[in-house]
Length: 201
Image (cartoon, rainbow, N blue to C red; front, side, top):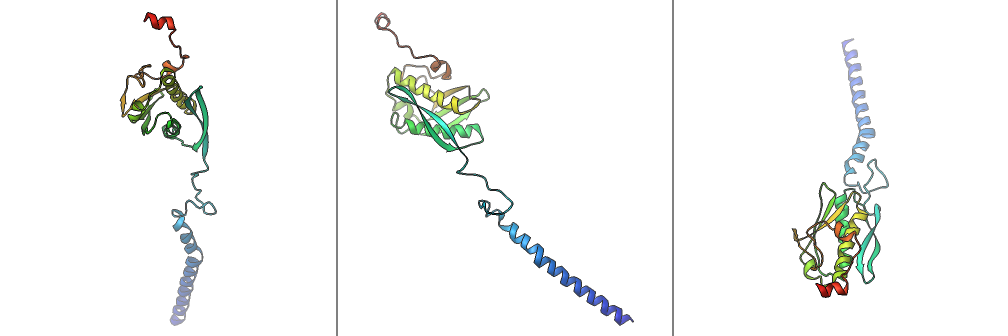
């Protein structure tokens, strides 16, 4: 009787081991094989349970204001959408400076910042000041186009300030004060002094 029970117990243990091996091979291994490459294949949108983040499809159209002979022109550009406003402002700044290249050459973007008051700081290289040679109308158009480009496209932006190599400058071309935010300067229409005023001055 003891040998019979021992034999039955041995058979049950063997069957249990075989069943455990079968479950492991048929169910657990495929799950492990599926989960392991998820990180490597996160850009694959054809399968898997982890959706990929859009890279090139998530775009937005922005308006870039640029100085021109007529005053200011508006060009639409399509750029990658950025959820953080300052990152969006940086992408817009690149497009703005690219559009200015025919007017003010070789300008590098140093950085874009935004303070708690909703003011965007555009920090550019000194070529922006050195290579500017326009008259009062041109200087006004550059400052106004800069102001409009950021306030129109970045929600919550109340004003714009210009920095050159991380520092404030008194003026871009000698006609307007650039130490203060640009809003007060560009919100009013440009008024050139009359000939009589120039003679009296």
